[in-house]
Amino acid sequence: MATSPLEQFTIKPIIELPSGLDYTNSSLWMTIAVITATAFLVGGMRKREMVPGPWQSMAESVYEFIGNMIRDNVGSEGRKYFPLVFTIFMFVLFGNALGMIPGSFTYTSHIIVTFAMAIFVFLFVTLVGLFKHGLHFFSFFVPEGAPKFLYPLIIPIEIISYLSRPISLSVRLFANMVAGHTMLKVFAGFVFGLGAATFGVGALLPLGLNVLLIGFEFMIAFIQAYVFTILTCLYLNDALHLH
Image (cartoon, rainbow, N blue to C red):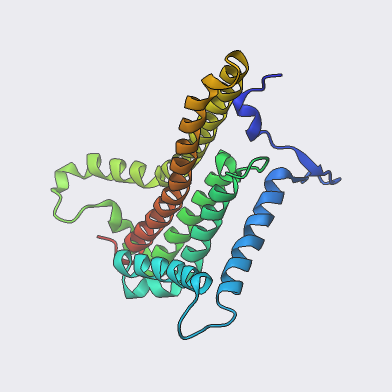
């Protein structure tokens, strides 16, 4: 029986709790992502060989990748925020990648999850800016060199742009994950439908296309984790350095 491509995004309770805060399939795959990411990093750095093997090389590459991202986009002041940025990248990346496993659940495909992460980043960088600059932080909404007679127009635009950050950050990740997984599900349906109608011959083309799309979706999983993380770095840079 054919099922809707959107059925894969249904949140189902695994352990029902009296408080109503059930342990769901989304919670389960968040737990699996945290355990998998931890095992990947701890296992890769367990021996710490002078000449690293493949596993250690991958762990060190991820570490250096995020370190360079912070250095290039935030500067030396951003080094203290490395644990936060690194955790965000790994959580999003493993959530996206593990969601490609058949029968798994992609928790980054739900706007409530991505928005919760985005609003946390938004509030965090805002507090960083307020603690560092005090009331001078609000000069961020007045571009340097702008004519004063344009302030009534520029300031509301800057405020709206600033407040829209968590929305754009969350919708970008959520929409890409939903669109990609829905597309894979639709093409997978073509494989079975055309295969049954043409004794398997007609399934070859959509099957080959589906394999290409899976590879493309893995690339998107990394790109979206990168985009979410680099935007976090840029927002942090704005909070630390203003204009």
